Image 1 (cartoon, rainbow, N blue to C red):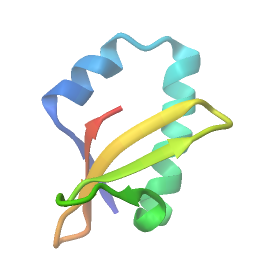
Image 2 (image 1 turned 135 degrees about the vertical axis):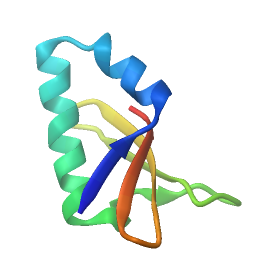
Image 3 (image 1 turned 30 degrees about the horizontal axis):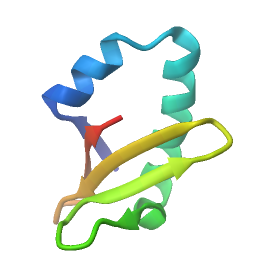
Image 4 (image 1 turned 120 degrees about the vertical axis):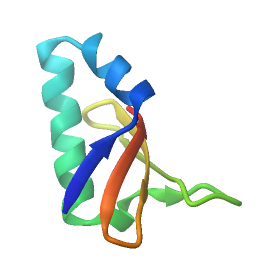
Length: 73
């Protein structure tokens, strides 16, 4: 599984602390193992994944080639 981040997500990433980055990494690994984890956002191709324990929310979509594209982290 390939994970790509669009520009807004990359910009957000530069503002995270090391601890926040670690928590986000855990969420991205979970999504890459099971891309259907997130809830479908009605009327879009987007999925919304929230990890309440780590306090992380990721908005993403999965392409036809199984690339996970992170829109917002």
